[in-house]
Length: 195
Image 1 (cartoon, helix red, strand yellow):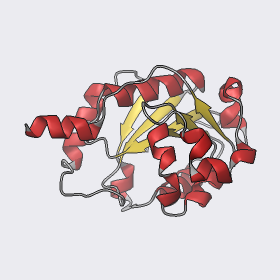
Image 2 (cartoon, rainbow, N blue to C red; image 1 turned 90 degrees about the horizontal axis):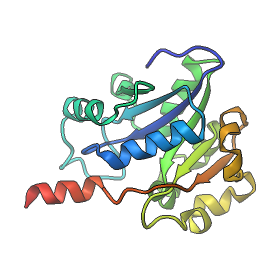
Image 3 (cartoon, one colour; image 1 turned 60 degrees about the vertical axis):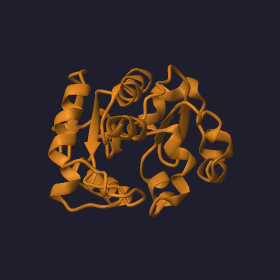
């Protein structure tokens, strides 16, 4: 895990990043700015239980490419989940909390992930672990109104204007952050590469 100190505000941005692209960087940059984070951990996962691993590039390659995409020095590319053999986000968050007392974490996800969040293993537990910032993505803007997770935790939604305070809040707390959106997607990039 990257080095942090007590009192720091850190975003946790996980994904397969297969491949990483400027849209991922935009999400990271928006999170850094709007949440006033000290760091953002760009967590390259060994796999995704909801996606096929057939088309998954090797972890080392996805880490290397992520390091070229994530230009801001506050973004720390890491793949610690592989070393701990972690498969599910809820387990990742439990480990992060146990190893970093006194650090204020926020889970970062794109709005496209919020749409399917209820399919994640122990998704309610994730909502109860750290505050969550959902960053707008093309085609998913209304997920903050219609997704099962958004409806279930509607009472814990924080106004976007209070996003800078999110790291200090006790979970469950989440916000939806509007802003510039990139139409890039890893799936589309992989399909274009095959042509």
